[in-house]
Image (cartoon, rainbow, N blue to C red; front, side, top):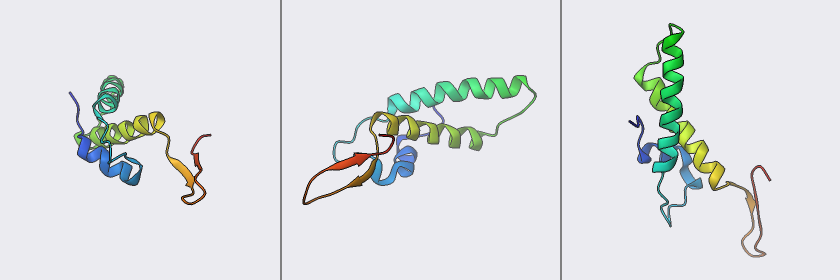
Length: 89
């Protein structure tokens, strides 16, 4: 079960979220939740305890990262002459 919300993830993304089309963040939150479940289990098995707040924060930022990997952020863009460049390219 997810620990974070789409609202919290959008707050991390700020201007990099496509607010005009409002794509669902659920697939990214689900992926982040599954990964955090494994991390929390691993930590517990090693005698460490992650707080609820730590798990939610990690899940939120992971979901934002997963979103950005599917919708690259602008590194720069021009308006009049058109054109753009994206991070990681």
